[in-house]
Length: 332
Image (cartoon, rainbow, N blue to C red; front, side, top):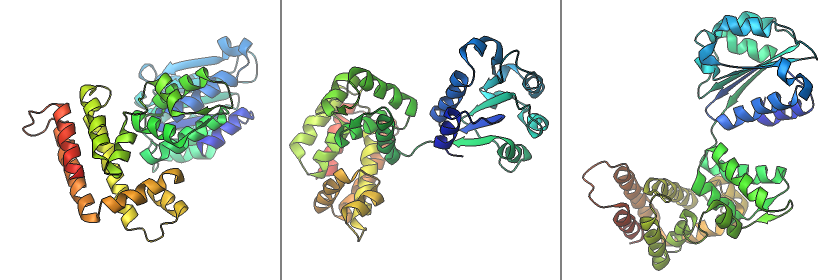
């Protein structure tokens, strides 16, 4: 089942006796688990019928014994096992999963790991309940996720503002969500969130950010690129060199894809590059300044600076000097 299907079922009061929520992205696991915890039981039954335990404190027998108990009042007992990856004998719950109590909703939050799908426990949970793997989103999926999250809250966002957030916050969805909530609180529903709003509420400068640096490099605007990296160098805590190198590396990989894509229609290029169609022209303009040979050279340069940013090799320059050296090598 997909995340959206699971959420929809819970909101429609369609419940399953066992939820195994596993995988690398904690945001989806927490969202499903919290929704079950907050909505299945009516408020007057919460104290009696909601049990939360931690994997390090229980074993399979304790989980089964609690799951087999009936609710004191009401229709359901909700049993949530947080950090279920710490339950050493997790496979031993399979006999219960084969014959679960219909009045118990057992939620296993198995974060940062996943069950071996070749084992019978996985197959049994999939047959009797919900087996959900929460996967990390790729960087190019974050802008779409931001747009979707805001649309659910009745907000829209400009493409540039969206990309600013994605570049600055990366793929940690809980962090992205927290910052989006700051934007939502500060503006009425129906609002289009702009770069100014992002700067005011999240603290990402609309003029000095990686997105603007990427734009300056793509247009061979040397003066603007240097202006931005001088700011980065004097504010390296907020603009770590390593993060900038990773984003620029991905940018040049996209330029390489752009060179080798024969169908350069707007929608096709947007799909190939994994970007909003709004930005396609920026890439087609940039490849005029960067032939394939220079892109390959720049990717090699970025690998070199990736090592320097990690402190490898004989590096005596500070981030400010490294930023200036990097931009010079990329643009000359």
